[in-house]
Amino acid sequence: MIHCQDCEFFHCNEGGEVSFGCDPFRNVKEPHCLMKWQLIKINQMVASYQTTLEYYRKLAPLQEKMFKVMEQEIDDMSESEKWKSSEEDEDEDEEEEAADGKLW
Image (tube, rainbow, N blue to C red):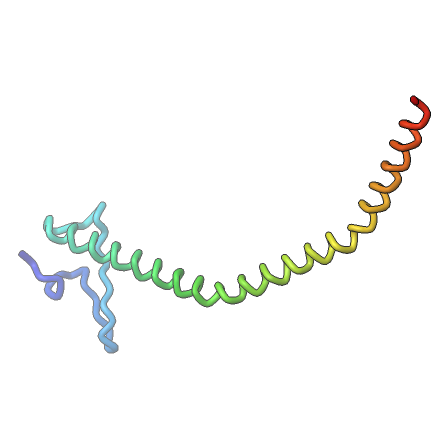
């Protein structure tokens, strides 16, 4: 089994950052290389998912504040429109009373 350090597709820079030039569809040397490549990709996906979760955790308090403000605005709008419905209800009541008086 070839170790990654000995492979021509292995690259390491001065900072110790490792990169792989191998492509599982073109230049896999051994079956173990494919398993290692899969592990690397899974690790990258998990790191990306964790970054996304961290971003969402930062946004959560802002979203909560925004929802509270929106709820308050909706309640204020409903309260400001309440007078319309009370007037309409009174008009309907008066019309019903007038209609009841005409029938009897």
